[in-house]
Image (cartoon, rainbow, N blue to C red; front, top):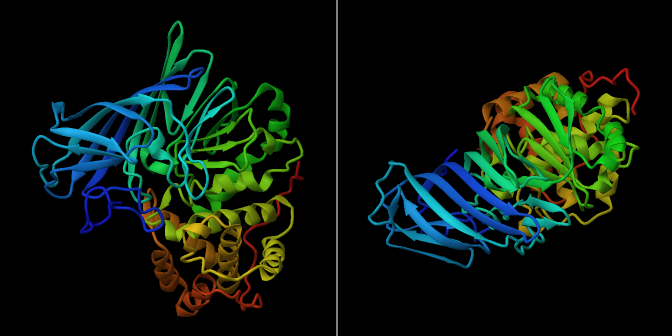
Length: 458
């Protein structure tokens, strides 16, 4: 989904929450990344072919690129007047102004020792592991490994050709379409046909073996350290049930397959990416201790990855829906009901400061756990008021209407008003737009659509 052209310069089209990232003047149509990575020296040699469609005649265009050196730039195979890489931006002056609406291909050769970039949310982007590499970009780390338009609303298809040392396996977004094994290096080619935001683009390089998980209702695979495989098989045994549940509630799984990585390293939190989630060794305990996290990351495939954000201000649309999906899975799996978890977290939130609205939390609080839980509570309030049939109809329509696109809180409010009426909008806005917690005592009812599974929890 393209964004209307702002009346600002080509290198200043930032989201208000991430003002130094994003670039105006064009839409990205596709990315093709050729990456050659040597693990031991953490050395990247790369080429990016980015197809863009200018909105207007541009005498200069810019991309986000951080910490890597550019050696060559061409446009449609021809030379450019000049290019400058500095302060997190790659500025390019074409040989002549671009033609509005006519696509051009920008090829950038670059390389160096990739490393994460500092941000208000910690170190983001390319991370060198003890034995491999991992990308964790949300919200502004994509520029640490390829030149991009790092704005949440800029979604495009990708093709990755990743060459690395042969003992290592590679996972990236999309489907593995080719694997070329050489004497010392192997090239892995992945194609992500569905449009993807830059912060969701990721890869993992490690020596863990592949594990097949399921073929139905969608292909599921994993990379798991051998010493953790028994615990992993226990903890992830019901992931295919989660896929079936969410597909029934929200609509068909939106991508061709789902992949999971478990790193040898411990990670503070699991990592969300498109068609794939990454967990640390500490998230696999053989006792289903990360059940809710498995459900949470899976739910992001519908909420955050297929239905993306037009702006970071509306992050609750990702996290509130994923958090509520944890409660729905618990209800289905024979654990506590969603209402139990809602009441529990309502009580916890009541004891915490009520100092921001989740519809506009500000960049400092956009990943605050209070936003996650209150977003889930807003959805539960809507469910209790509307009843299950109407509530889940709204969620399915939301996922269908904005499939592989982007949306805003206002878009969701309009949909709620159209389907559930003005009283539901008033209720929803009370949860989203005010600081104090609304009362938990809400009208509503309706039979439960989430029925406990007949299987016992592992």
